[in-house]
Length: 180
Ligand SMILES: [Zn+2]
Ligand SMILES: [Zn+2]
Image (tube, rainbow, N blue to C red; front, top):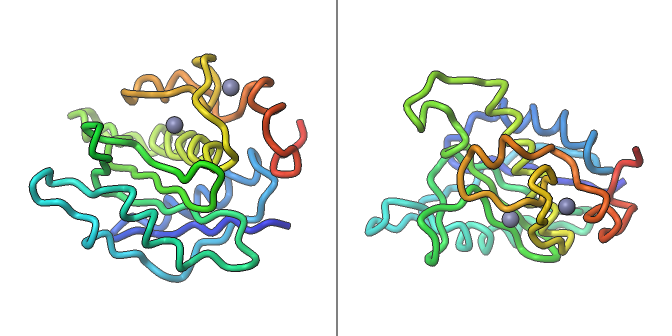
């Protein structure tokens, strides 16, 4: 079976990756492993924005792609951006093989609210499936419940399911999907 490598970035809590390792195979037909290495995000830090350029993290992940790799999904806890946007929840290479997400703006405490571990876990799962969907060449979906809907605020993520709508499912190689 295809192998999805989960890559910790910086000081991210590895238990978040272990939760994803358990949850993702329910959505995608892949075996998940947490890589025994940690990617240092420091080279992607831009002091003028006090944020980390996600495309630079994606570039540095290429060397971790192995013959048995389906995708590499990096999980960070730092604030990510691309130059045209104020921030991003994650970024992926269209058509694969690498994607990155961050818990930074998925945490309730970022918005001054009480921590909610279960909600954080759901948001991380949705963002993981969303970015992996981009690596399967999927673009944003008009259906707000679909995991491929665009989200410019965390509330939009909460409206989504963690699965693809019928239309998106029909557009991707079904060998990557869990049959329901
Ligand atoms: Zn997207
Ligand atoms: Zn869709």
